Structures are given as structure tokens and as C-alpha cells.
Amino acid sequence: MINLNIVERPNLQDRTAENKFYAQVVANGKTDLERLAYLVSNQSTVREADCYAVILSLLHNIVDELKQGRIVKLDKLGSFQLGIQSEGVATAEEVNASVVKNVRIKFRPDQRMKNQLNLKTVQFTLAA
Image (cartoon, rainbow, N blue to C red; front, side, top):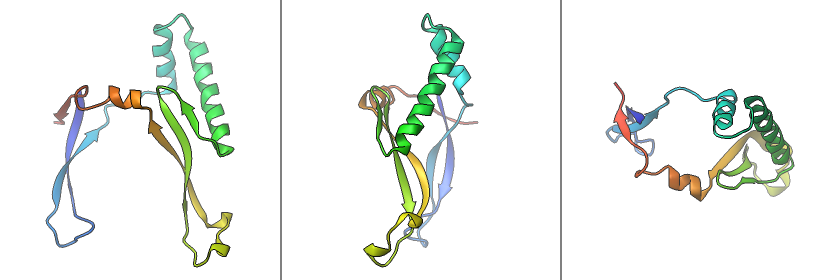
């Protein structure tokens, strides 16, 4: 069950418009790598420590591949890709690495994951 909060927000494109109310997901705790390793080990014949080591190795290699400019596609999960925020400059000749202000990781879920998380499979309730 997914808990929802009610949030009031202004219209950023029309400051004179009335605020509107929106639903926002409330997180219900966190799952870390140790928990994931525990869950995977209980669903297989692999020990928890081995699962943890494999997941850490996977994370390390994903970061290394992203640093080389590659898109990392994990079938059934999704794709990771680097994105940047840069400063705008007047001419194309002024564009260089110094205009990059931030690097972020973009994730696009695989269609199978999207299909498993849709309005037919997820239930919502208002948080107390």
C-alpha cells in the first residue's frame, strides 16, 4: 500500500492563479544493499554475503561504464545514463567543459518494470 500526502502548490506559470492541491507519495522506509542481498539470498541458493558482493561489484561497474559515456542497460530493470546541467553561453565557440555545472544519473525503467508498477497493480491510501 502506497501512502499519499496532500500538498498545496502554486501555479509557477501564473502566479495570480489559485493554488491547487496534489497527491504526493510518502516514503515508507528505505531498503539498502544489505536488505536486498538478504532478500535475494532467501530466494536463491546463494549466500547473503555473496549476493552483497555481487551487487557492490555491479554498482562499481555501472559507475565505471557511465564515466566512459556509455548507457548501461540492465534488461528487465532499465537503463542508466549520465545527464548534465550546463551554463548557457552566447556562441558555440564558448562551449567547453567549464560550462558543465552538474552531473546527474538518469534512469529509464524497462517496459517490464513499468508494466509491473501501474495503476492496476499499486494501491494508494491517504496518510494519517
